Image (cartoon, rainbow, N blue to C red; front, top):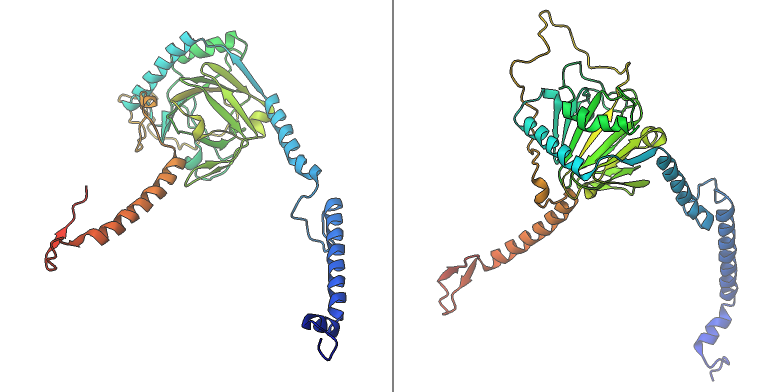
Length: 365
């Protein structure tokens, strides 16, 4: 024992600074009090006492609330959807043959210019009425869509009336004379159409679509991102079977977007969309010509071209989605760097016989 009466230096230091223990106790009590106060405010109010909004939900009720509202919206969407089975397998076989004829006519340039609209992995064929949308708009945004002047697209083919519209009228899906616009969307595997609402100022409700070639899904409330393409979770994912008829009205047609996601087109798929244009729908301005020509053309007009054409047999060939291409690009670039590094190291190598002056070029297999 030392002269100061302490056998351990730590005891001596502790006796010399008794205020440290009191300070630590005070800090601990203060922290506990602050935590309790913070939890209390977060659970019972929308601020932390400084006028700031809370960032975290600690209450289980708050975590359930978004799920409940999403389910409520899904029910509202579902209330505006009717699906019926009208077309048999034999009906689908005949109609799909006619769709292939439309594709062939488009490739041969037998349609008017605005009848065919080409996009990567998706072609659109407008009949009866066509309209500007997307990149075709002079001013972007909903409400800017315009019908083309009369005669700018081909008439609805007779087979669409005989094989499709007549059966829908007989089944009570649409009244006689309702349809004056028919659009055929031809999707290749991995094709898509981004979230949208069919223009309210262009088309009356309901919106009727009939699916062919394969099963797919129609999704509601998705958000798209690009490069690479990514799609958020839908509010509602609606299966659409080959030959099924989907009718949209109310909330499903007017108050929420719908789309076709790339991952939902695993095989070639086509859909015939049947609509009625509003009598007051705006049209693209067309200045009168001093010598107007008759609407009939004497030579076929070439359809708009793109770097990718529709191919009826494309469903039998594998396709790679854009989201997969991005991943492949990363892996291929890293492998190229690895090969380049190995190549630079092994491009010149000394011969094994010890001849320092002789260099051997390595051949890559």
